[in-house]
Figure (cartoon, one colour):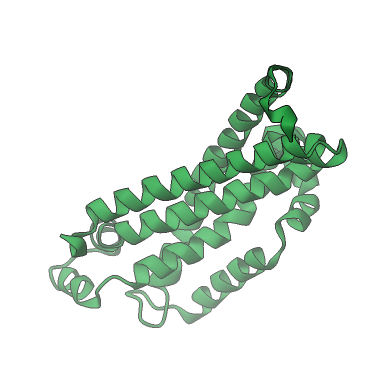
Length: 227
């Protein structure tokens, strides 16, 4: 581990570390955006069509719930291998940052849907009923009641979702996705250079702490219950 304090180590590994951090951030941010584009509507649909929702529909709710549960049940690395042909068809490659994004989105979207469902289920039914009594449409209830009222919880859920996707990017490095996970495996494990593996691992921990801290503070600032 003494090599960590040498100029040669950082001259060689520093640029690789910067590139790996950039790739990890790109995979995380892009995958989170697309996963929320899929997961948020699914979560809203689960709440609206639930037994106590404003548009109950048991069959639709169970079908959507079943699909989400199947998606959540598959271990990420198995899912990533299974969707390789689809990934190749969609983005033109199975490797690198681009190759990691489709499986990251597919894996994270069901998880996000359940997080959104949990957050929206916490909204006070009285607030929803009051808006309904004033003639609010379903779309208005979603945009002006459910989402605003659940925003602090949604933000906390967002931090958990981002951290989960960040962890998935490290797993994706096992099959050539790039990023910090790839550096830890290729340089730290395969080449038996533990210092490089630990540096990559510490950077991932730092990123997780930053995400958690920022999202927790934002959630606390907008939570009306804490004012």
